[in-house]
Image (cartoon, rainbow over all chains, first blue to last red; front, side, top):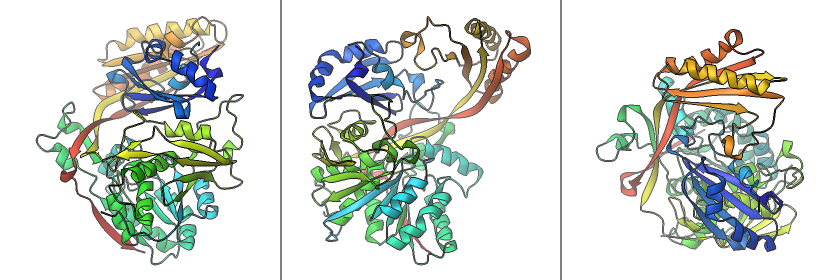
Length: 99
Length: 446
């Protein structure tokens, strides 16, 4: 099953930093998110697209996790040559994760 | 210290009329007309907007404020003047004084006399940033275009206390535009971190306008939103204790749900327990969202801790040039022809001294690279994109020229060449002690 079936997501950006929220559709799915969508799993999923460790913040009252990703130096929003310079499509890519 | 004189109101209604500089104008008009607002806020300054505005001002000293200022003010000023809705906006961008003069002229042209228009300056700290010891180290001084500190609520509070009807700022932290009127109306103390944190939550939910009313949310079959073409912009009805209801004008498109609010609450947030603004280090981690009725979401539980002693400064600088060219291939063998074109470009472009060069196969791997894309399919059509950087304009422009030359020199059947060459304006951040930064307010009366 894809993560998309149990959670939704929004991506934000600040320079080299990209933030990705993962929000469970139902309260009972939150435990699955917390167990499966680890910082390490997210880092592995985005291998080659991001630099360094992924930070994860837990928000059980919102049934949500918040991830902070750092992109390579040349990939900040104002300097990147990528079509999606903001990295706004990364949240959708995370929803393609198998759980 | 109390932040304002309490006006005795039990609740106030604040609307958001723009979430970025190019945002739609008709939803702001609808909100002003039907929202029973006390305040209408326009948030129009993305991280790089002010650097681009500063660059425009170097060419035309009269410019530098939001390019849609005139259109927006013409659209909403008559209603706002009639209903006594006060406008707070960072549309001053790199030229708040010019924006105020322009707004005065618009008001006069519309026959709106006696409007008090405030321009907040002092966020421009270019001279300080260029001074010894405080420059952004990785950027050479001659390339720096702008340096703007994120101001907080203080200058807006001062202008509100002076009865300004329209307040035009340059760089001010986005949530501060919304927090200031709450402090002003309810007389919240400037050290009540819980109230300032909760007010910041409200500002953060509103500041991207349509992003809390169903914009940037729809995913057909999973998260459906109706009426997106006439998406309504949000307003908050805020009580004296800081609790609020996020809503929109009845009959407007979109929807406000606990889910839309959650997505926006976490948008661009790193540590949800420590969101730094000039006014407070806000804590979003214990926020509670509750649906009262359709499109009415109750928000409470925001809190915070003491404000930081330094202010963030965004430094805009020239960072060379970027060039781009694109060409399409379609039908049988499209992908193979696009890849051949890529190989030709890679060989041709190696002689121009580009500092960086990338290729994308749009439709296959341009967004997330090969790792996440489905690379084993044979698409009907593919669009090759070459993008690169160079120190000089002429070198960057060679990318487009070489892509265009594929028409007559490249693989069969290439079509639809487009290209662009532009200067890169990049942003670096630094911190500056509060004591070094002072705001000033200038008033005009229409």
